[in-house]
Image 1 (tube, rainbow, N blue to C red):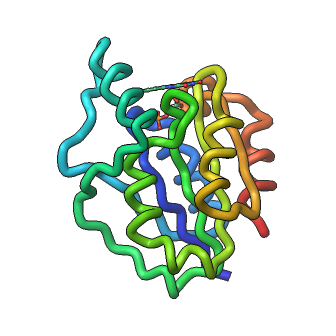
Image 2: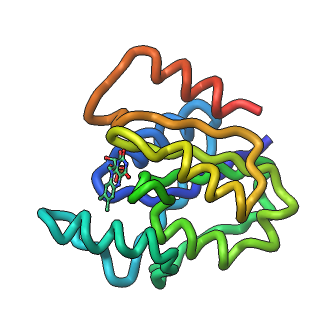
Length: 156
Ligand SMILES: Cc1cc2nc3c(=O)[nH]c(=O)nc-3n(C[C@H](O)[C@H](O)[C@H](O)COP(=O)(O)O)c2cc1C
């Protein structure tokens, strides 16, 4: 059983979670980065990211290496942006949609307060999900129970 964790992270919470999952499953990490990164400071950070997420934009990604046929379980990870998944993950899904349809796919999101359930529901509209998980800023607000939650989510 080989697991891939495909994720986008702006400020490290999703990356922190993806790395935990990789440790627990001996999985491969595939980090998505945009050709033109989103602003990560001040008002522009929330304005441009939020707008892009609501508009369901698909920004161009830097080249990434993903051979989907190698994996039995593909886990997608994203921050919640304006109750949506982050746009880079949307690009990834549109570029790999046919392959993902024939795989077991799960998804987790990190958020600071609310909107995770909505983001996952919208994601479920475009791809069928085996398991889902929502964490609250797990790197910045460490909680003992997150470890067990991540373990339970990661194993299928
Ligand atoms: C553009 C933008 C929009 C966001 N929208 C939401 C939101 O709707 N709900 C929420 O709870 N957190 C929201 N957040 C906070 C992030 O989802 C949260 O801090 C997440 O853990 C960040 O993951 P990262 O550190 O991997 O980037 C938003 C952050 C950004 C930058």
